[in-house]
Amino acid sequence: MVIIFCGIPGSGKSTIAKELAEKLKKLGTCKLFVSDKVTRQVYKRISELLKKNLGKVDYIVVDATFYKRKWQEMVFEICGKDKVVVLDIQCPFKVCLQRNKKRKKPLPEKVLHIIHHQMERPKKPDLVIESEKIKPKEAASLIFNEIIKKQYLTKKGFSKFLKRFGTLYSKELGIDLNSKKSSEIFKWFLASLLFGARISETIAKNTYKTLEKYKLLTPQKVIKAGRHFLIHTIMREGGYVRYDGKTSDELLRISKYLLKNYNGNLNQVHQKAKNPRDLEKKLQEFYSVGPVTCRIFLRELRGIWKKAEPKPGKFVKIAAKKLGISSNLAGLKKYWQKNKVKNFDFRNFEVALLRLEKDYL
Image (cartoon, rainbow, N blue to C red; front, side, top):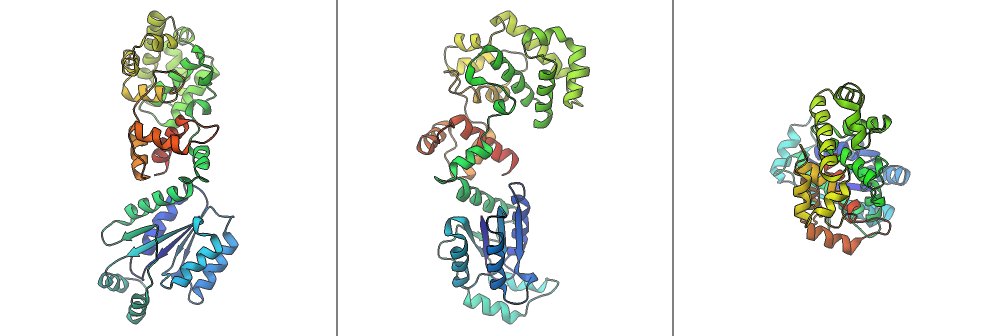
C-alpha cells in the first residue's frame, strides 16, 4: 500500500507522515520517503523508490508536494489506483509561510508562492486533512483508519482482514468450542475469567497455559489444587504480580458454584436460561463474573449456544464507527451478511474489530 501526501511546504505533511509511519510499523514493514532530503529530480527518485520497493515493503509513505497532477498519476500507473491512498493536506497559505520561517532550513518564499499558485489538488483524494484544525497524531489516526478501509474492507481484502485479525481467542488457546463439549466450554470459561481480570492479555494467556500445563482444566481439579497451589504456582508462573489471591479465590468459588448448581456442566446454564438476557443474568450469578467477562465468554459461543447473543463491546463499537460500519449488533450482522467469507463466521468479524481497535487503531 502506497500513501502519498499532497500539499504545499509548511502544510504539516512531514509531521503527520512521521506519525503515520510509526503507526503503520505496528501492521508491517514501512518505508518513509521525505522529499526534503532530496535536492534534484524528486519525482524520478520517487518513481525509482516505488518500482524498487513495491511488493517488498508493506507500506510506502511518500512525503512530497505532488503539486502537479501528472506526478500523482505517475504513482497510479506504477502501483495501481487500488493500492494508493491519496491525501490532500490543506492549510491556509499564511500559516504555511509562518511555519516555513521556523524551519531549520527555510525554503525561499518565492518557491512557496510558485507551488501555491501552481498547486493541482487531487481530483478524488481518499482523505482531506485541514492540518491547522487537527493535531498531527489525530490526523495520522484518521489516515490510518482510511488505509485499513482501503486495504481490508473491500471484496478482495475482507478475507485477509478476517485471516489477520479475526482468529478466535479460544482457537489461539487450542480450545474447541465447536465440539460443544462441556469440558471445552469450561476451558473457555476459565480463559474468559482471566481475560476479564485486571491483567494484560499476555499474562491471561500465560496463566491459562499454566493451568493447562498442570491439567487444572475441570472444576474438580481446580478445587483439588487448592488456593496455595493456585497462588504460588499457577499465578506466579503465569506472570501475576498483583491480584493473584483474588483471582485464585474467584477460580475456586466459581468451580464450587458450578458443581453445586449445575453438576459442573456449563451447558446446563444455557439449557436452563429462558432467553439471551436470562443467560447473561445466570452467568453473572457466578462469583466475580461481571458484564465484561460475561461478554467475552458469550462472544465466542455465539452460534454455538442459541441464546448466546451478547451486545458488541466497547472496542468493537469504536472500531466499527472509525471504519464507517454501523456499530450496533443488527448493523454489524447486516454488514457480515453482505460481506461474509467462506470458512469464517460472524465471531471472526467481531473479534477482528476488537483486536484491531485494541492493538492497532
